Length: 247
Image (cartoon, rainbow, N blue to C red; front, side):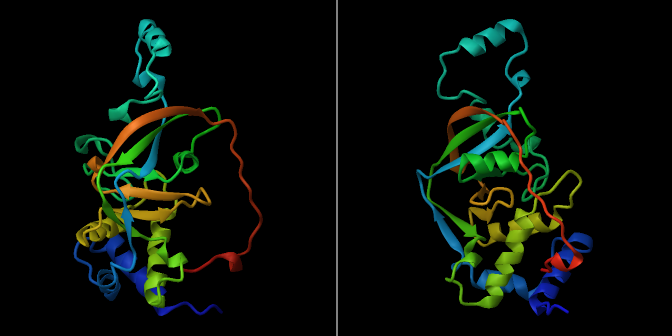
């Protein structure tokens, strides 16, 4: 039988309490572990750094008649080939829907470190068109780097395990109807620590990382390009119950 760590059980209890009983004032020693060591997993995102954000492209968002279509196709605009500056960014607060880290009515900017990861994270279908915008960071920011557990720079095993568990919560793909209470709760605490955003690995793109900006105005869209999804490939193999990894 596998030897599950005490921290894993404590994490599960914490998550279940937030999801099912008290998502606002739940206290745990794991929170103190984070607050006491925030400098260890901080990461500097610098002014001028480049990130990418995408949307499934729908031409009906831009044109409504034949004349507008011709004008759009023949336009000499080269900077924003897909969605424009405004439509490439985060939604305004009043139209922001609930997301992995943000509650309804709260606007965060979800971005990635490369174009490929953006497309993976969008989970498009074959032949769908994607508009991907390039964003430039406007000021120096400090992010909570949840990928830090992969390095050898964290000597505290409990902290490394906790960052891994939290990173898994953020990285796991979610679908309509998912309960975001715990990840939104965690994001709120990272904000309270003074972080400007969070970094976590993409579970869909092997080398990809997601950068979530708590303050969308920290970035500015400077261009956009259109892409077509030509193919989608899935690899799989059989498994048994023993293959399931516990927290």
